[in-house]
Image (cartoon, rainbow, N blue to C red; front, side, top):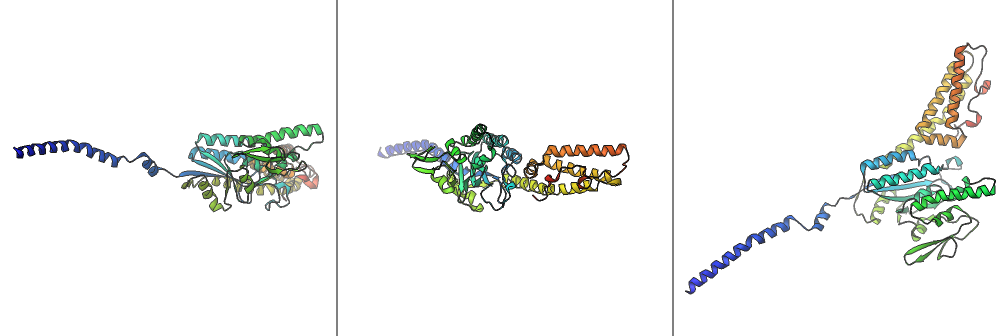
Amino acid sequence: MILDLMIAILNILIVALSSLAPSTGHALVQSKASPPATEATAATAKPKTVYVVPMGLKGTGQFGLDIHPMVYEEVAKDITLKRPDLVVFVLNSPDVDDVKYMGDDPSAYGIFDDDSTRKMTRDLKEIIAKAGAQPIMVVRDAVGYGALLGLSWPDMYMTESARLMGLSRIQERTQVEDTEVRRKFREAFVGICNGFLVSGGYDPIIGLAMMRPEKMLSASFQGREIVWRDDDKGTWVIDNSDKEIRANFTAQSAEELGLSDGTVSDDETLMLGDLMYQRGYREFERLPQDGEVIVRKYIEGWRKAFEDAKKSYPAYQEALQDAQGKDERKFLTKAKGILEKLLSTMKRYPAVEMKIRQVVGVTKLDIETEILKLQERIRGLSKSAPATPRGGGSKGGGGGLGPGSDISNH
């Protein structure tokens, strides 16, 4: 009896255990095959891709020339194609304030076209947003109109020796004799420039102090928030003069006042890594063919084209001077060809046209008009044989662009 009872109990236990085995085994397999979601995310997370866009390079950075909408249209197309996670602008535009590459030549100052610059900035923001990327501005140096670009982006950093200043340059654009007209013009132009700061999320009071001598600037702290004031009554006084502009920022003052999000290394090899670390990205991947390739090619291209253009005027003048007697038509045709090549360069690189206009006052229209005059002169020679030498250039007083248009020394 006892033995039968023990066998029966043992059989019951075997059946019970066998019924539990499949369920327990299934659970163990599931656990190995499907790790927790957090582990899967960590294992498959990809480094952020970074697309760098220089705005000016070391030794260059003329606003409106090196930093021109033409090249950033190409950059925008490339961003759309590559769709990076982050777009990092690196601004290097010291247009004024004793910069070595400028020397004493005022023609090295940048050129500010507010309409094209606003459109360039707006288009870049739209393209980056459509690509799903995050824009970040790093200011290496911004003295002059370049400061407007630095303050056009909410996420802004500065390198250790960077400056953010020089917006007093707007005074150059508002100097007219009539006091009332000057006041209205100044108000309008300051408003246009302040639009860049507003688009970046900065208080327009900052811009006013950076652009107008009589405006002051200070800041007070309310908890962690910084409140800007247009007087010198705040806790931190930046500009307490109503006679001159003192609202300028270094990397240290900009960070302490919350104007910038942080300060990164001046060293080009360390700057991007430093920036990514401060943004909380321990790993990132810089795209190998990014905006630096496009911008460098453009800057080298337009500057070489301008060097070639500088040789055009003396060659053109020489051809005019040689347009005498039986060789008149030959050298007039040569002069016309030189100007046509120059015109083609100006159309290819608007920066060349702007530079020529800046240093000598000769416009694309002037070149086109001179070409038409040469065409008429050549046509006249075709209708009748030349009687006496007509002369050209300085020998015969036969016209030309004029002595004031020599660009060879610029």
